[in-house]
Length: 216
Image (cartoon, rainbow, N blue to C red; front, side, top):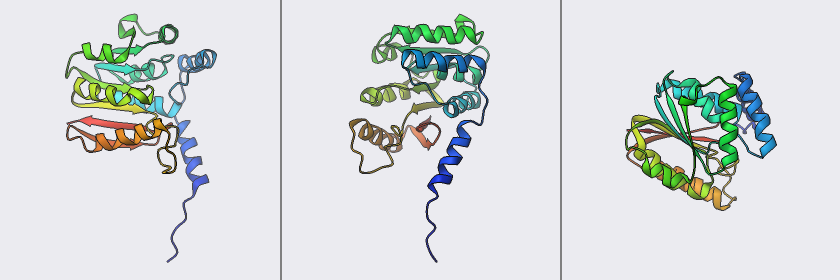
């Protein structure tokens, strides 16, 4: 029997269809305009919708985000989290933090729902309480993502979720010939989390990949 050939165009069409599955609220649409203006690449619509679902599934009350951007991913998380949930979001760029404040204001979120911190993530994460968080999202440069992931596991409660955005490194991880530093970092992180007895993992195809690890 002849082996079935991969249907790449169909697969891409399915991915594109899934990306536009959920209609975004006006505050997210405006945030994407803001992202263009300041040169930030926010979470894709498919990723944002999935973040909302994951936060809802965990009934998240306390959340941490590394890489605030313009607030797209943070707002998506809070839309799924409990009504009294608080997001701690960290970014070293002050203009990103300000853009996120505008996004949350556009969305009608009380200021008390988001603790936005301008600073270095490694230093801020080290001060957060062990085992106190339901969701930790990392959307950061690959160079430090392994360190952030280790801190994220420490911060999670049992059954909490560690989420790594762009885990497929702009779709380069599946291509063995690609040896970019960032690509190899993401491959190494995927393998290390798979072998880490503290978590159970899955790689999801939304956006440019979400690596999700549930704390045992």
